[in-house]
Length: 483
Image (cartoon, rainbow, N blue to C red):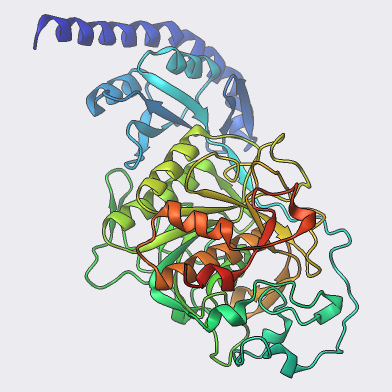
């Protein structure tokens, strides 16, 4: 070791010792202050410049810390041990990003001490993410217009699937059902004349999991191939990811206990023409379930990041996962989440994200992850059956890229059931499904090319010209035509 390196390591070691000593007494005072409420199961939130650090009922707290490039694992471990903390998980896809936890709780002084270190690029809380149902305005109509005939449903392409509830799937083929506007749809029948999808294309649904036993989904679920070893993470251990990944509980069972993820999965790829229920945008596809939300619809950025990290690892291992469908979001910006989504893009994965359900202009009030200005992110607004922007949908002429049907969307639900739901959550998997249709014929498209194709494959709508980047609603037939 030369003199320069020796002095550098010595300086780092002395800095760690001094910082640890400085905050030691402050930590003990702070822990005494919060001890009683933490033991009663309360949630304590300690404010700091990066946001609120949440301490759960067990007293454990987590932060996401990214160390600067060139800092070795040994140096990181030395710093973390100096604070009497532990590295819960290293996010392999992002150099230097780690989840750090402390069973005694991370107090504000310790957070500031981490931030003050020259080797730390950023530190942020493990933000909460909650599913929020939209408040429906004039987008729904309880009156049903039965003045259409089934023959009209097949007139635009010559063949419709035999799924018994297909007639109610206005997003795929709008014949005026329930006072809708004729042809205000994604023109799925015409697209299916070109392709029904492919079981060689994998779409990851990052949500509350998926009911992978649903009779309309089971044939299109991703299952770990026989030749692929179980997922192994250095900190989390070996995970038998036969059906996908559950980041919330760190296991290989992403079974949905909320329903939201199963609904999104059915939009992407409920098996078509099987005489069962509905048809997805893809009749054939592989849906990879990623669970990071609980039965109550609660998740964290840490769990979302770990799930995306899993996708990147599986992509590197040869799984043809090309799309992540993300029907959730928050107004809290996470640099760590942004970093891992960027890495997914570098590995060839498109990230399709819901724009949000607050009727807000996201040019002014960003919504994440849909508002990350990344080359692999595409933000989706919701339309109703009359080709109108849904009353709840976020919009943004610079930040929301295109729209898709998202009101009264019929799809799969828990325990073999079907349900209508509304939100940009429903519009997002429509676009994810169209992306998979494109890839079924053109798997070699880059993320940039795939994203550009989607942006160009819209029906222009006057009322969207100042609401979205593309000024239109996705059209699957345009997306899969020869270009």
